[in-house]
Length: 105
Image 1: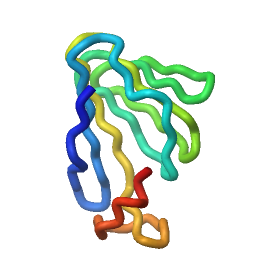
Image 2 (image 1 turned 180 degrees about the vertical axis):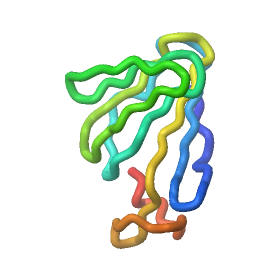
Image 3 (image 1 turned 90 degrees about the vertical axis):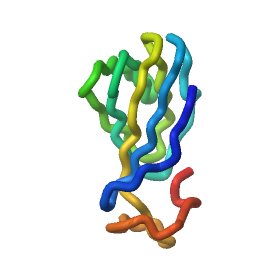
Image 4 (image 1 turned 90 degrees about the horizontal axis):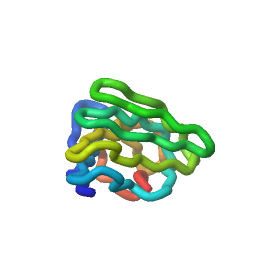
């Protein structure tokens, strides 16, 4: 699985993930911020806690802060975005990226 550096669009950060092969996955992880996962190509399975949702291109789901989740490619050459608001050094939503990489664990 490959991750592209954060793209900045206004007050949003976007991370692009891609998998060459079916079944590659992000591993179980969590963040200190809400985000949206959106399928760009192929199909992916998003697991949050004990719930799963299959996404096809254009479909998205909300992942709450602090919830363990994972994303798994269901087809070769799948791609998805994680979309989130920027955070300042106090952890508050910011209208632009202020260089606080530690806000995004």
